[in-house]
Image (cartoon, rainbow, N blue to C red; front, side, top):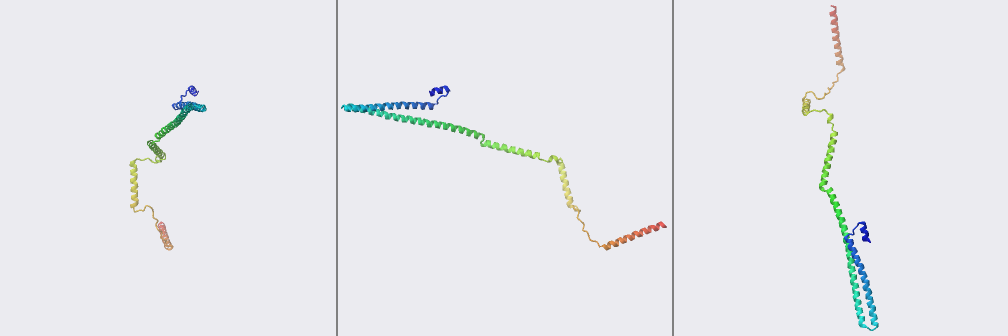
Length: 219
């Protein structure tokens, strides 16, 4: 029924599943044989008892020998079933190992993909590219904040002439007899008496000049 259902759904059983199914069917068949061997062994024992009661010791002995053969078959069949069951268990373990190996292989593939995406070479390349981008942004920032466009534009020769003139001015200020800054002249206190006498003398001179002028006009 399961195989037919699998056929309808389009799913084909794996080799491991088919093998396990065969092993289980074989175990079931052997369990049937064990029951038959056990039944025959019991029958031979009952026969031996009947023959012993009737005094047929030879027949009873033969019946017991046949019983031992059937019991041997029961034991051997149990051993076979144990081997088959162990095979099934081993098959399950191997199937688990296959699944685990496939999972690990998928993980390894994913890891390799991650390594390719972030390999040392790739990482170094990204870091160098990032550094270049940072430098470019810094250069853009420096260019946008530059104030040179607001300054007077002069060529190199003009800059050289200005520098020369600045040097000449500095030398002139250094060697000139005049100080670069005016030095205040100390003020000497003057007594009031000489100033008064000088004023009186000047007044006399003015009066004398005025008198001479008036006399010249009269004559």
